[in-house]
Image (cartoon, rainbow, N blue to C red; front, side, top):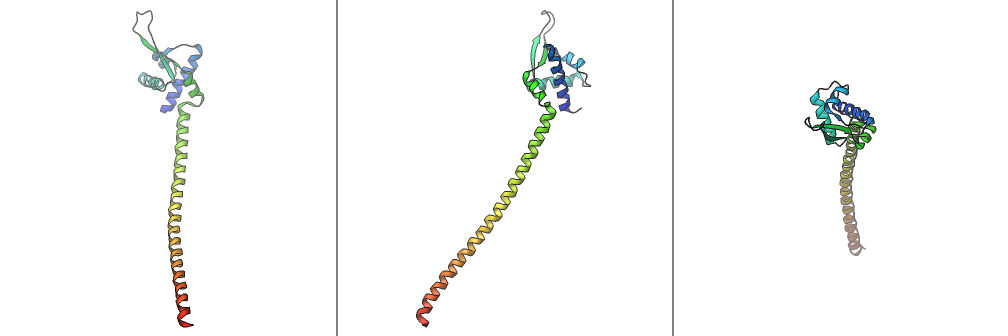
Amino acid sequence: MKPEEQLDSILTYLDNIDNRLIYVSIDHIYKDSKTTLDFKTVDMIVEKLRNDRYVSEKTESALGIEPAYQVYRITFHGKLFLSRGGYKQQIIDEREAADSLAAQNRRTERNEERLVLWTRNLFWGTVAVAIGAIGLIVWEIWQYFYSFCCY
């Protein structure tokens, strides 16, 4: 199972449990989620979900006799994230955004290459016009002086 599928499966489990409005411990998540993940992986997944704020955490102890332990439940942000496709959809969206950005970069590079080519052509066109203007001035001067000396 891919990491994003693991994250989505635990988040889906917590979403289904949330209908009873209870917090569940890591032990319950590990036993009841029906995944093939080991306890350490489930713990890391819940930590990631908590860091992403898709799961809230609360400390509980039974009558103060047992040591305190952490319990978890999905947040509204987590429900919204899951309804939009979860981590799997997030990866697809990121990949599409990266592809779109790459295509835009290719277009920009192509446009820059065209701009350089047009700039180079504009430079040589300007040089040709300048040579033509100088030639025209020389021709007019030549005609002016030639008309005095030869006619």
